[in-house]
Image 1 (tube, rainbow, N blue to C red):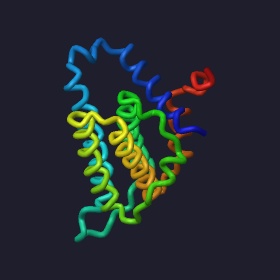
Image 2: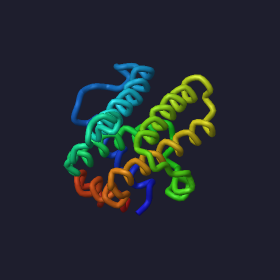
Image 3: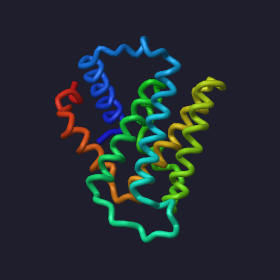
Length: 174
């Protein structure tokens, strides 16, 4: 199981979406697409936080159906992978990610993800320093996997879902 295969699967998924729709990305404008990907990732991440209710200190946390949580997480993962493909961060591997520090607090993980998304967006738009941006992206990816772990979602489950749902197995062998 290799991380680069998830990037490849996401690329295939997006290619399929483009072929089924008549919307051309260049019609929307490069800057709008850039902003759209980041906004979508922020919204999908916020949906996970909303589902967990981790930000409501005055309430007992409800039982969250794992399938609902898993679906929300995968939605956000798709946008994270998409950003990685577009900006050529798809060279990262699990070794780089596993070397990152983990956080036990789900609240802090969400906060750090949002901070890092802002930093990555700024780095890509204004600094245009690939290595700085790549470093931030690795940190975000590590935090997403840390978030998954806190939500009792394994990398293997994410990978298997991508393979099953999108019937991509034969494409990976090419």
